[in-house]
Amino acid sequence: MTKMFDYELVYNYILELIHDELHEHDKVPSESMLCDKFGISRLTVRQGINKLKSEGYLYSRQGSGNFVNPKKITYTISPYTIFTNEILKSKKTPTMKLLDKKIIKADEFIAQKLSIKEAQEVLYVKNIRLVDDVPFLFAEYYMNILVLDDIENMIDDATSFSTLYKEKYNLDPIRDSSEIDITSTNYSSKKLFNVQNDLPIIKISTKTTDTKTNKTIDFCYSYFRSDMAKIVVNYKNGAKND
Image 1 (tube, rainbow, N blue to C red):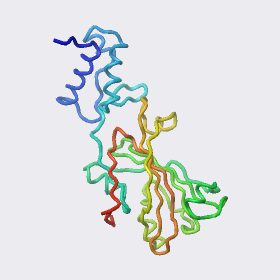
Image 2 (image 1 turned 60 degrees about the vertical axis):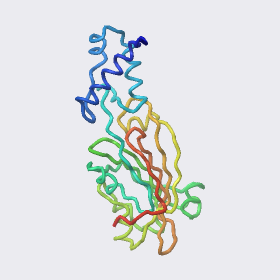
Image 3 (image 1 turned 120 degrees about the horizontal axis):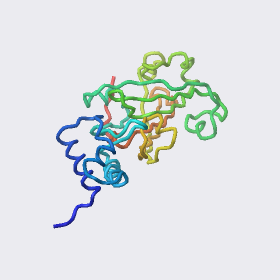
Image 4 (image 1 turned 120 degrees about the vertical axis):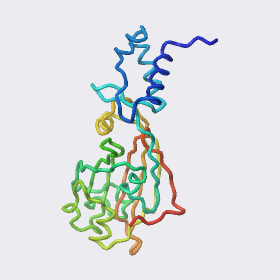
């Protein structure tokens, strides 16, 4: 019989709790409790906990402990994806919080993406999207104010950009390109996501265009928690979410 390492006692014990007793976002036993239960060092306990974190079972909150990760949410990227609709499919509650909005001058890269001149003014918007009150993704938008006149005065926590584009500006927005990359959490993103441990982040760059005029409406970076999101890309059969 193969001898079990001490950290595996912690790993297996918490895994059993997750399967049999605990629910999403429930707190798992503290390190000190686990040290006492198994008579092992805090370092060994952390080995077991870190293994669970790396496999996506747990996440940590600074000063609060370790918690059960929710099951991953399938999030489909298509020409007409709307955040609220995607989350409602999982029978969860979506919310949004506006973090920042300001007029800035487009650098060369953003100008190229929006098909405008460099140094042209654009609206920068940053928001965070939550699922059942847990941070799920944050996004940075660069909006073409040549197309979206006075839009800075129309955005708040509850604004659906897609609905605003359609109803206020009579546009037909479509996501015509997306690029996916993997990055990692830094101090800023850990703070936004309210996590302590390092996480891979799914970074998706998208451009939205008006099908009526072929003008670019916005360019966006979205940063998803990889332990919460399963990304599916479907550009072939994307259906409108009106």
